[in-house]
Image (cartoon, rainbow, N blue to C red; front, side):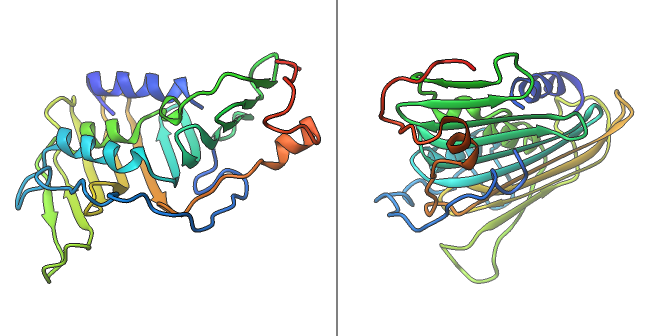
Length: 253
């Protein structure tokens, strides 16, 4: 990304650091979809010939706030490629994994609501188990809603299904960079938006002239409303048969 927007998002990328499409092998089974989950519709964020990127980002946050889902992100910048995976059952129960490709760095987090387990290959105390629950919103680096707001703040084309279909997705495309950007070549953004406002996919690519390097972001949501999270193998291997509600474990190892 170019300009001021690039600085903000690069800081967000470095603040976090899973494989694209799933943290290890996840349990994905049907769970009840909350009542009223479809009440927040994408309109009026997406009008016939225009998109209000800020309102669409807000609709996306509402649509994911009380839902389970699997989120995969691939972020390719001039310094390398970061893979992020987030598997969410609820606000405090999730698995997070991030990897910087070719830099031998991986970080894993498993949160149960009452406990948080971390394996950070970069930190000196690589293994941690603590009673410090962290909401999933604090693991969203970068936050997909911010990406929606930043990259779709331009002239966007809206493609709707031919038939009048309230349950069908809307496709958004743009080839002009947002006004806040410094010069960027070959700008392309494509997003798929569900009727409830959830941006199910977002792909952005362009050539950043200020850094003389390509930029590409890929964001994908799947298993929305049908995801559960179970204790991962790396937690079982490190802490054996300890339970999430059992006696306190030592904080660092």
